Length: 267
Ligand code: BTN
Image (tube, rainbow, N blue to C red; front, side):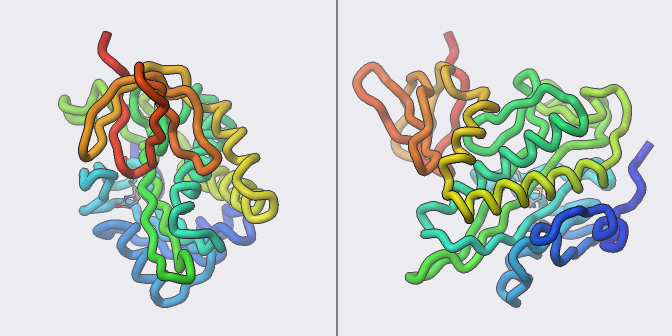
């Protein structure tokens, strides 16, 4: 069974938020909601604009990977945010979004999921959600951030290709039945609004503290694959900007979101 088609009207009436989803653009199909969100951001769409599609033909992930986004199978959407922060702080929005999504998923579906730094949500080691944050900035600071979120909702286990069946999952695959996408989207928007307004009011510290309680990365042995080096260590903490601190045999390294792949270390 496939979910009912999403429309701007059904979404707007399901949302309980003020800022997040203040404008809603909904498409039956699109290349990438991140690209469309950037276009709308350049046309001055408001802070919190939601761009969503039932299907993406060119869904993009981090590190130039593609992101599978089949028709009716998930929530493929992007939020346009306009926080008053420096470009170097943009990755805070990735962590904020991951926190909001993990809380919404746990609250509405009951699935025991956690955050793999910086931007994946996993269930028993399988990927349920990916987040891709991109920004436009100039000397004065961030002009806009687009935070693209892909949640696998109603994809059956057998619908994942054999290649990714062991590393990807969906809400339906975990629960054994389809789930209401609108209810989940509404919860994600609520949690995002709560976290975003908290960050604007009190700074990043409370978001970071809460993020850590859902982490599946901290305390783990990891392999860091950076552009110029690969090393192993233990993920011990995040610094105040959300960068990962990895203790190797020689030193503590600071890993910036966006620069690296983090993998569990082989033993
Ligand atoms: C990743 O896992 O590397 C990030 C995946 C992000 C996918 C979402 S789906 C909605 C938005 N549009 C895109 O093209 N990508 C993001």
